[in-house]
Image 1 (tube, one colour):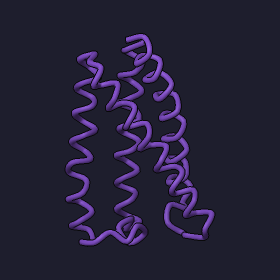
Image 2 (image 1 turned 45 degrees about the vertical axis):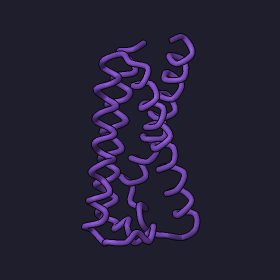
Image 3 (image 1 turned 90 degrees about the vertical axis):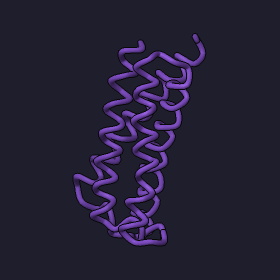
Image 4 (image 1 turned 30 degrees about the horizontal axis):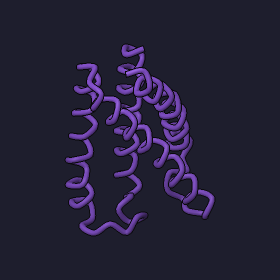
Length: 125
């Protein structure tokens, strides 16, 4: 089950990082009214990417803290899907390209499976 979590975590990380690349294309800082433009957006992603990578290391070491990082990563993936779906339903055109939508749906799917495995492993640890 821990091997499965590793592959789910890394898959979700790749999907979320790809989504963040897509976010730069769509100027997500304008959508969320974040200060600093592209510079602020890139600076914000330094700790986010660090968090994702540290979590992967902790998952590979089979530490309980890795399960916590995995849980938080799943919540991030679910949040990305929900917030962008909300904006799409409000008529925003960002993330309305087919691949942007596919990326969000895949992120939701992998996040839900990863969340299930993470919670299961938390309960049996």
